[in-house]
Length: 304
Image (cartoon, rainbow, N blue to C red; front, side, top):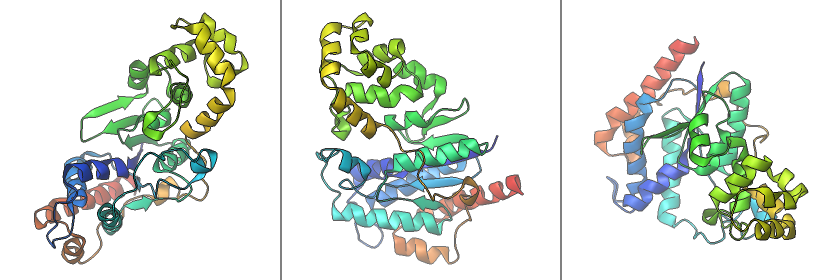
């Protein structure tokens, strides 16, 4: 089965930024985030399965459909500093010059782009390989051969591993996050309900719609303070429905490229010049170009 690789790019850029974001590049500009991502790509890109790939990005914290649902969504996060925004722009240009598709949308987050591409890819017969460490993206791992892989930390989860870790199915993750809340996104949950309690409720009652249709049924779940939790759910039903609209991923974004349009095209000409201009250290030119070029060549042989 061919593989569609979908990269949650921002998480790897932010890791590099927090580790060494202001370190200077060869031209003296802040370049640690770009350097860190380049180093990471050289490590794991050659090991990826050949096939179509998309690097997905977020565009900002203060806009999009979720902010119209709840203006407090992610409102506690500070805006990206200009030194990071500038490196994000160069990173996207670098990936494009290497022959990879990069996608972003002002209305949707990278997670939504990944969910929509994964849905289309699965329907077209691809297994889905998501490169991320974001728990929200466990919702995307629906096929038996799909996986959520953090190549920098060596964590690799298929559907069964997700079910074992969270004690719920990937289809139930958004419901769990609505019940338990998600502090990282400023989404409130039910007082006294954490992920484990939410998972117990969902294992018995299946989904949030069923819970909201009959809140007293929660008293029959094996959880602490079940009557108080049932009462809280009944009293906060509207807020829970709103939270569920925030935690679920949009998987039907229109006008995205088809999987067949995401095959890498290989690095562009005059690579030494644009790698230098973009701030890639000379020691990384050859391995980065080799990794990108090898993916294109292998993919061409497989799909010819």
